[in-house]
Image (cartoon, rainbow, N blue to C red; front, side, top):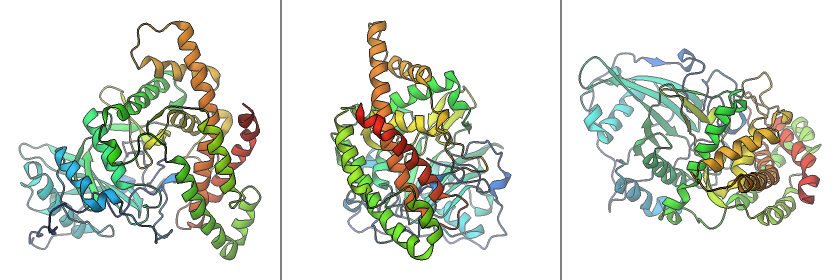
Length: 466
C-alpha cells in the first residue's frame, strides 16, 4: 500500500535495466555552466490532499507498506533475469517508450540533481525539453521522501507561450528488490499505460522513470465507503483484471497460469525470520511484544496449510493490483473518474485476493495518530460487498445475465473474498515483521504486524471450516 511518504519499498536499483546494445554505454553528459542556487520545493509546500501518487507529503505520517528498506537483506539481487537479458529494454522500445542507460544519484540535491534530471530529459524527451538550457529553470517538488523511492514533480517552461510543463519523476533506490520485481512492474505499467488504466509511461532510465502528471487528489478512508466511489473502484479493478487476457507476451515476465503469492510468502517468511533474530538480540522489548502474537518459524507450516486451503477455492487468476488501499487511488479533477496507481506489488494473482485486500484496507487510517492500528469493524458489510461485486460484474457489459445469476455470482465472489482475507493478513503481517528493524520512520511496524496476525487468528478457524 502506499502510505503518506513512500515507505513501502518502492524501488529497486534495477530500474529499467541497461540498454540492450552490444556494448552498452553511458551517454555523454553535456557540459553545463555553474548554476545559481536552485529552487527545490519541500514537500510541505504541496497541498495536503493534492495528487501525490498515493503518497502524502514527506512530513506526514507513513503508512506501513512504504518503508525505507535499503538496509534490509542487501544480499538479495535487485536485477531480474529478464533485466539481465535486455528483453525489458527491447520491449519498452518496441512499445514506443524511450530508454537511456543513465542513472540519477538518489542522494543528489540542489543544482546537481537539477542538472542530472535535465540531462536525462533532453535525451529521453528532446521534443519537449531540449529548449531548456539552464537546469535552474526546472522546479523540483519532492512529494515522497523514502530512500528507496524518491518521487518528484518536475515543472519546466513550455516550448512556446507562457505555460508550464509538468511531469512526474520516480527514482528507485537500492533496497526494494526483495519485495518487488521491477521488470515485472515496468512490463505491466507499459501495458496499463497503453490501455489507459494507468498514467502514461513517458520514458525510463537505469534507476527510474518519468510518468504523466495527473491533476487529481488521492482518496480518503471515508471515500471508500461512498457507494458511488466503491462501484468505481470495482470497475477499475475489473479493467485491470482483464489485462491478463490481452497480454500475449506476459509469460515473458511471469507465469500467467500460476500465482506467485505463495512463493512470495515463503520468501518473506525467511526474511522476517532474520529480522526477528536481530530483534531478539538487539531489541528485546519489540521482540517480546511480537512474540505474544507471532511465531515466525511456525509461519512456514501455516503458509503451507493456507495454500492448500485457498488453492481449492479455485478463484480465477487475473492481473491483480494487490494493494488497492485508499492512498493508491486517484480521483481526476476534470471528471471525477478514478485511476489506481502504485503497481509495485502487482502480479498475476487470484481475483479474490484483490477484493479481499481492498476490503481489509477499509480498516486502515494511515493519517491518524496511530496509523498502524486497523479497525476491522469498518470492513464492508454484506450489503456493501454485494454493491461492490454487482458493479464488478456489471463492468463486463453482459446484457443477458439474469437477476438470479447475478446474485449467485455475487455470493460466490463474497465467499472466495472472505477466505482470501487470510492471505492478505498473512502477507502484510509478514511484511510488517520484515520492516520491524526500521528505526528511522515513525511507524509502529511491530504493532502493525500484530494487528494483521491477530485478525488472521481470529478469522482462521471460521474460514478453514468453510
